[in-house]
Length: 249
Image (cartoon, rainbow, N blue to C red; front, side, top):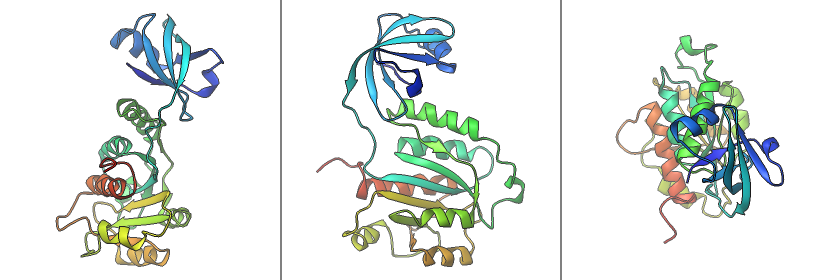
């Protein structure tokens, strides 16, 4: 059964209306026809079973049958503060991060971010479209957002509001996610921040400043991971230890 997201303002008590790019995809690619059952999400985490009633070139009308008791979201909310990567690496970071249950992606300007990237990050619309498609594919109950870039200092201020701050760092040794879990075992963990450095890594001063706001500097193992790999590797480990990966037993 196909799943679609449409804003809550396009819902009535009995119907939902799909507009925009999805319409062409529905009748040209998926070849959905009237009478077919679909799942439709209102972008607020609420999902419904529906039946397609009408399809035009600009709109798909869906009759709402019942509200579904579905929540595919993790008990922890992860925000990834990603030092701006080169080329299309952010595409992969967003796509895989969505699959792993991340809720927000914030590009960050750290000291070693390539100077050419500063002030030229104009891909938010495309990245949010990637987030939408990844949310559909992975059956998320809500769509994560890619936010405007911010400075390292702004990112630190935002991270202070989190329950847990985790910094994968190539120079960290010994202290990893297992030790971290033991250290915070008596603390309620709901909001998690991960900050990943750029291709050139963090400056030592940046690491020291992160420690001052309570960040946990962790190793992800003996091998050096690329910037586009470190974030979702760290997220996977955190989802396993604190979230919903790995099953219930």
